[in-house]
Amino acid sequence: MRRGRFFNPDTPKQDFSSFLRWVTQRKPGAWEKFTPSTPGPRPAERVEGETLHVTFVNHSTFLLQTMGLNLLTDPVWSERVSPVSFAGPRRHRAPGLDFEDLPPIDAILLSHNHYDHCDYATLRQLARRFDPAIFCPLGLREPLRNLGFQQIHELDWWQATEWNGMQMHCVPAQHFSARGPFDRNRTLWCGWMTRSSSGEIYFAGDTGFGGFFKEIAADFRNIRLALLPIGAYEPEWFMGPIHMTPEQAVEAHRILNPHTSIATHFGTFSLADDGEFAPLHRLHAELATSPLATPFVVLREGESHSLQSATEAAAVSATVQD
View 1 (cartoon, rainbow, N blue to C red):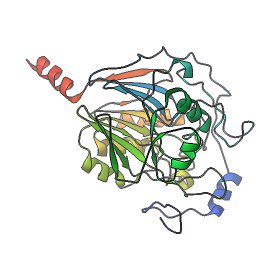
View 2 (view 1 turned 30 degrees about the horizontal axis):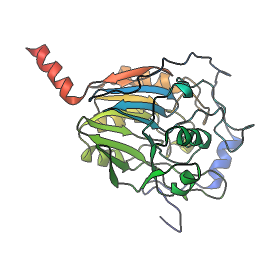
View 3 (view 1 turned 135 degrees about the vertical axis):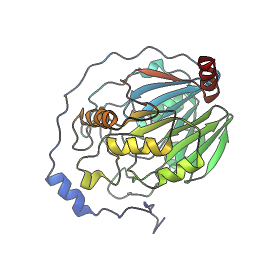
View 4 (view 1 turned 180 degrees about the vertical axis):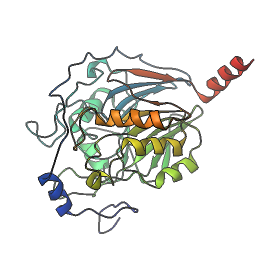
């Protein structure tokens, strides 16, 4: 922290003139006004054992179910991600899961305080309905307490805490924070890694590409699932330090070597100049020309994906070989 503000150690600070240049020269790609969708089926109340059941809700919101625990990442169900309800980025797709269909939520992983990741209206409802634990980076304890959370775990990069048989690790990301014109970088941003007997789950949050991926890979060698962002990268001269391109997300997958990666941060809110389907087109093109040893998956809103534990996968592999 410098003069009361957090910073990215490996990237220069962008000044206000860069922001003005982007705003005045924007060439946004095409987005559908709204794409109707039918919410996915109600998920199981609990998934016991080491199986990991992943449901994509929208944007960076996932329901993670394993070991009898239910976790949400950066939960957003609001119509807009903005300080006001009548302006700002509006959703182009409905959430893939109705809020009323959520199973009991035990914990929330929060990456930073931007409106498209830290949705106060949704968080307030979750606190009231489930009283979950919430894991957040430095500076967010007081706002979350004001929203009604009682079990707040506020961590710095590389700090960890134990929770219900899991180690919850706060890991670096390359981004920034702000909810208004005067609080830029007053709170920290991060990714999250959960570690348990069944392996590790990585939620990158919102991030640009950086050397910290190699640091994370060195410390976590059994990543079952990586949730990696692929959107809001145009124009790259401006967005590059804070948002990965699809090609960089693929490179992050190679570095982290997870059993499976799933794409996040696309298709819900128009936050930059890439069009609605541009991230997916670029991701599919990159995967076609540079195949990976393990899957990089794209889910539709409401779609789910189940992953075996490392132990179960090894047993299946041994059976097939026999």
